[in-house]
Length: 199
Image (cartoon, rainbow, N blue to C red; front, top):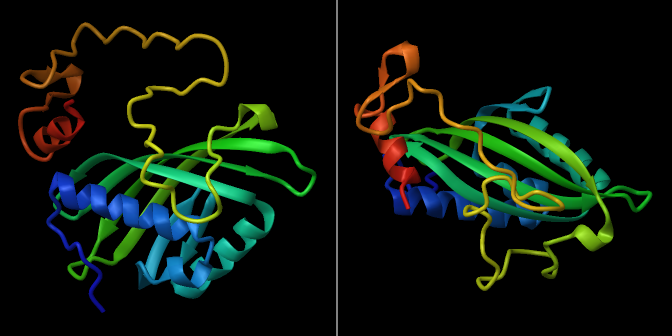
């Protein structure tokens, strides 16, 4: 089974892949979501480790039994060949009506057919009030007129945007060397990742 777009990814096809994943997860249909992954796909989701589609379906069924009125936005962060990195936010409430916004990052690896064979997700939950909610569209895919969150460095709950900490003195930008590690941001795959973050 092939699931376009296929690697190697461009900025456009990587963004398309991220939006397809977002739409599928917003359906809250575990079977539908599982079809984007290989039969033996391996996951790390927070501190939980999974392998295979049946385990994915079981995990997602538990997740959406607990996370009510789930709304998700994923944004492309970087890409290279058959890898994509995204960051995301989703809002939900538990059975007692307590609201949360969950912030996360994912790393994806795809096979030649465009199916995801590896997914690693790190996620943190922040308690919010119902008045803090940002995602109010009807259940299902995010409407086209609702923008992503890519332009927001932190998306704080309250108060002013916190300033980013200063870069280390050894950081010289996209044309130089990165810190003491000697890793050059001007060589692939780092060059492509840097380009993907450019405005």
